[in-house]
Length: 296
Image (cartoon, helix red, strand yellow):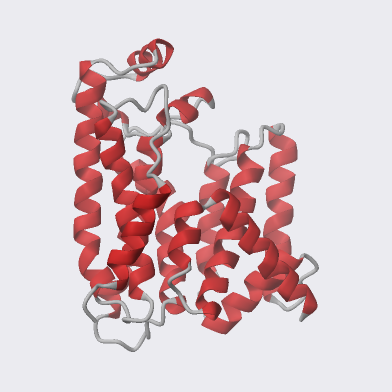
């Protein structure tokens, strides 16, 4: 048990450092569910850091393979790493489908140069969804049992679809916020066909990055993708509303805070090329407060 407790403490620290919106929203959850969120986020961030830390492809591939093998061992009850012991405790305690982690690691390999799955450009939204299914949608599915959603509910399929969609909405918001950072890492997560509809291609994106400000076509393309992103949040809202009252405020607060990133991008004149849109802590606290007042 000491190993598991150490793992939860480590996961909490990772979430507090790297996932401020999730950390704040998780404070609205009961302790057991909150720890589950930390374990999921801690694992996801660990995998993401392996891919993003700049190591050579062979080293990163070996590290991701080792993480995958260690996860499999942890799910068999043979965890050596405290973080994975905590994750296995969460998976077992909440009956999370282990196959969702296979999908997640597939998407991580899509970010890994040299891997057969590697892709750093996406021609269409359909191609992008292959990535976001594993990187984000399955995390929504992993969250459902933590949030107390019973698989025997008559509306479970609708809730699962909404949870997956909300995960993808969070991910698209990240992509819109992090255009400059991703470009600097030679990655473009915005679908090329949607950009091309406004006369934007990789060359014009890079030119805007060098200028440190978007031109008219880039602003219009970003406005279009923000509209798509807002529609994702709108379509996911009924699933959020149908969550158990005890856990619903946490997800409602996270959705409002993430959606507010889009507002910050608009307020900046769609400048995602010289700055990173951030929702002030006070406003995120306000989202949490309003979520608590949601009628039960």
